[in-house]
Image (cartoon, rainbow, N blue to C red; front, side, top):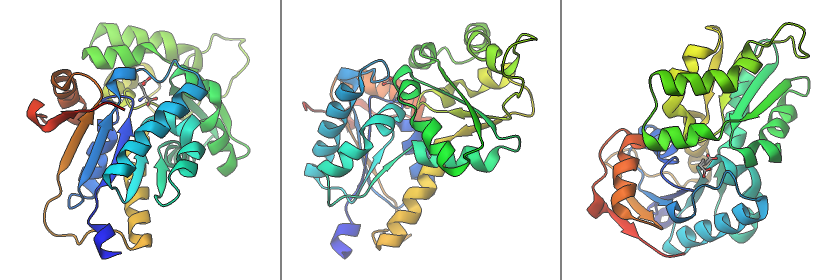
Length: 279
Ligand code: DGL
């Protein structure tokens, strides 16, 4: 068990978006090593079928498990929404934690009026995983799911502040938060779940177009808390002294991964620290 505790935590995403989750993991568990895989060659997952995302997810999880990890974090919301069961089946010896359930828990803790909006990729919304996870905790909750695919491109481009992201945010969110009078859902959600790795980068623009009282939930911190608790429960946590490191793997263009990823992580990633792999 002690040797297993020394292994890194494995994290994968369709690309660099999962670095928002990595950042939260690093902040919560600075002594742990992390092995991060961004499947940039096949990004986006959010527009693909559940079968394809599950196949890609199992390949990513398998690659990390083969390299040796003690726990697998599925940082990608789309993969968490559609591939978690397949990942657990394919990696029986490794605990698998996704971001949907922690995000749903945080939303349920935040809402007072039991009305929750979830924004995510097309596949995540279509699969209904957030809706099911929230309903399993709060059966009475009213959930409005909305796909916001353009947010992914804006975050990748670095267009996260100013008129353009705010106009896009208003176009997506006004129907939920400022419905025209006479429309069907008069209960305005008091909680908004950012159900996609890329959306925390647009939090400022989103904040400007939703009512002030809206609680914006980002699952990264809750996921990190869940991972911390699970490692403790399994006796797999590293002693809390020393400093852990991150190893980066990508399936396409290490230079681009380093450049774009630095923005998502909030600290520079050197290209020489990114290893190009084939799945
Ligand atoms: N990582 C994906 C997610 O959180 C967003 C990007 C993609 O579509 O692959 O759903």
